[in-house]
Length: 174
Image 1 (cartoon, rainbow, N blue to C red):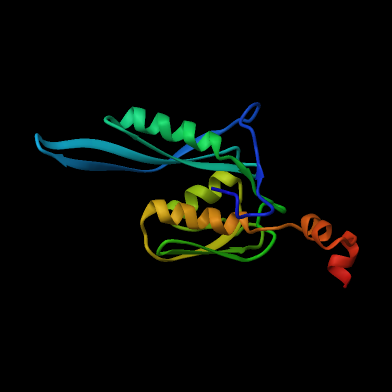
Image 2: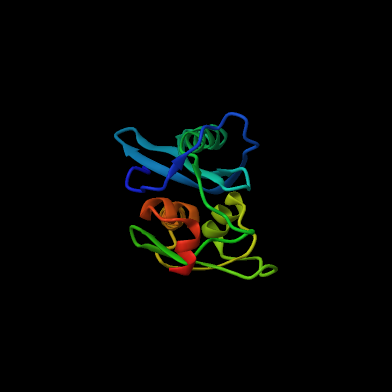
């Protein structure tokens, strides 16, 4: 899932204090010859509120096991996101399917100005001050993936300096 992002740093779940947050549970129906077969799909975001976050999808015949499967899937997809003083390094746009998400760094004390799935992801990452706007599709699956798209494109000054092969001072004073 994260192959297209150069700066995506995958993280192992061992030793992390991860908190899981349920984004949504949907009842899904499969129509068969014998009638309707009901199942559930759950989307979950896990994070340590210190820059590590992951998202997962679980499907099962009952809600509890769907959530458990989603948590396990999310722990397999953990990535590190750069956070600077409780906010983001820069503004970034993300998109997935019909969902568009714009996340903007904010001054200390602003809080998390975001709704629905975007808020859950940003709180799981550990961002305390951020502005966001979600446009297009409000489907929670796509909104979560669009938020991850924006977060995975974020780069801090150290990464930019290393990519360009220059010192940290030259990044700011060039």
